[in-house]
Image (cartoon, rainbow, N blue to C red; front, side, top):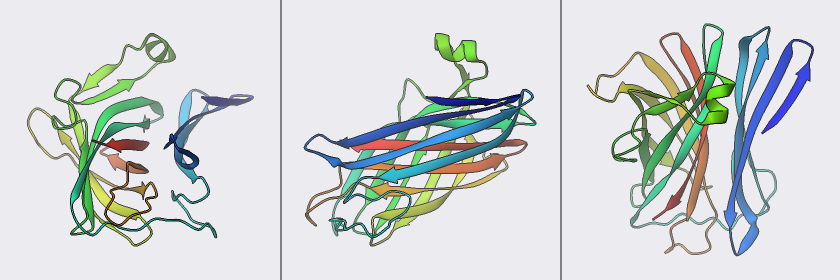
Length: 218
């Protein structure tokens, strides 16, 4: 966690990294930040980075060994978290993640907070105060995010749209947004990438939200 105080303006950032145990230069990293001015959230954002030979968010002149698998599927379980703002008031959110990649059709889709991601921890968990965060006492929201199918490109990236739903009724709320990310590198067309990470952002009625996600294959 990183923070910066300038008068009445506070900027807080959360950053995370995952990597291959056998090659620490093959990593996926990302995070999100929020700016608060006079007790109101005024800006939200996400960011990503990658090590040499990996891909995430952008690519310079790095030589990646990514080769898209042409057959099979892979399931990724992990977590998603981020920040939200509602008419100046905001907080932090967290939820379990499920992604399924179909390499035969070069597609990936999933959900955040749905029953399939975690039958016990379903829903979106929010922290509205610093005390809630310190004591790990979130409020469970009856919501989940549908990560609609995105196409996997030749460089290992993907992007799609998203929608927000009520978990108990399955009712889709008025919402819009996008999600996207990258797979970790792989050195064989017959092997599935072991990790996936990315960012998301959108709006739901009067609420704006951003976040990051990461998952590992099972």
